Image (cartoon, rainbow, N blue to C red):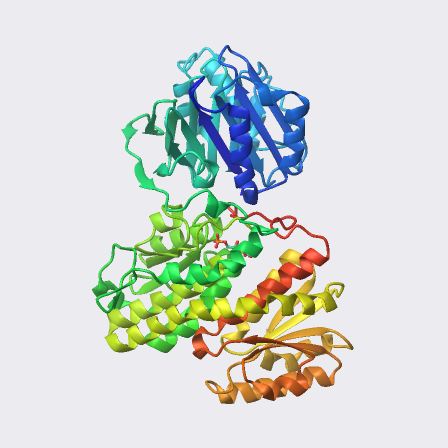
Length: 625
Ligand code: F6R
């Protein structure tokens, strides 16, 4: 949700700011695409600013027209917006600039007390141009820096003073034309990382902003202010006390963040799923035991757990539904699955004997973060599954298992979903092992089954042409239904979500047994129904029930697209189209069954002429509630 790039380089040695910041924004585009903007300092007290509504290409064109590509500057910042306050217009785009064109700021987050601050500024004679909460920040800085108070003339003190005035969530990067050797930034509740380059320093909402230049980074804590110059960085808290950041090395490279010959990142990310599974498993079985990446609670604490809540949003929530099946089956501990956005607003019974499993690709999702804070405040333990090293959610958790899906650029999750499912199963095994409900050999056997899933996903990818052909029949439909039972039900929900968000088709997922209790009324001639079939060998009872369900829908005129195991010929009479998936243990079937649904959504969206990587109205990480 909003992407930020900052850069301070060395004249004559490191690239010029405008091109570098634009490139950084290009890689952050998945964080928002309502508008984009850039500011660069010329080192002599001047500042160039361009901003445009819409995609980054609009900004690139404006930069070209203004001949800014040749602007001599090695200090710049940029922003890509996902609109919260104010429509996506040129005026509301960031950077926001003060009345003297000296200070520029970019902001990610929400300033909750902005109405009060805005009224105060207006009473002081400041004219605000935009409808955003963010613009107040630049005028507050102006008031501190140019006012008669103790902060006059000090950019450091002014930033500190303003940071202390703000409520809500914010990452702000600040440039002052009279201090071209530095950028300042402060953060609370939204992400910011520092990149350490050679003769250059960087800021980014995430490391994709500067991955082309360095893999050395520093993680900032809550309520930190950082100043970067070409030579280094200093971090303080909001009171000005110096503190240390946490250095880390980024374990993926630029190539991983580029399209690699695919038309869309999403297609590349679908194809990368066998690796996402394998990489997520790697290193987690050690001497016959499942190990988490970080564990700040003891196995004894895990043995005391009497109830588990899984909290997550969107696709991560669907992955969490699968955690429930696995954890209850393997540990016999009751598990409830909750949408994070609902969890904290009801009075769930929480305490030291409750474990909250928080699942988030980005590790920034505000709903999930606030849910875990709510749980911790009531002494519950929190275990996070996250794809982003050092993000806020894992930092605030008692234990962490990182998924290693690599950077996911397309807004819709694909490989991170399969990696989350894999990680959920690992957490289930870790709990079973800690509580003694599974013997070491059983844990190893299931781990082996999980390892085998990479090859099975690879095999499923061979269905791509078949799925594309099927997609051609339905690209113009305006409704699609998905049905599954047991672990097939979350798969149905995930398939429907993918179709909604990418192809803007009304799609719904149902437990197949529930159809006859209402939704079957939606069926009429030609409505496509996608059916996730359980294995006839591994789950014969469920399979026979599903066969009845497919017959029911077909009898009412629906066109059936059946995702069925190789060799399951019983479905042939009832399937208008079949997609084959390899046989695997029932609990693990979602890892293969989801893949054709991702392909289907991507292909239908493409055939309808939509940008698969950047669905309308969405942002990759949702840092507002
Ligand atoms: C759907 C999708 C979203 C995310 C959700 C949670 O394709 O990507 O539904 O799954 O916003 O995001 P994270 O996992 O970053 O917390």
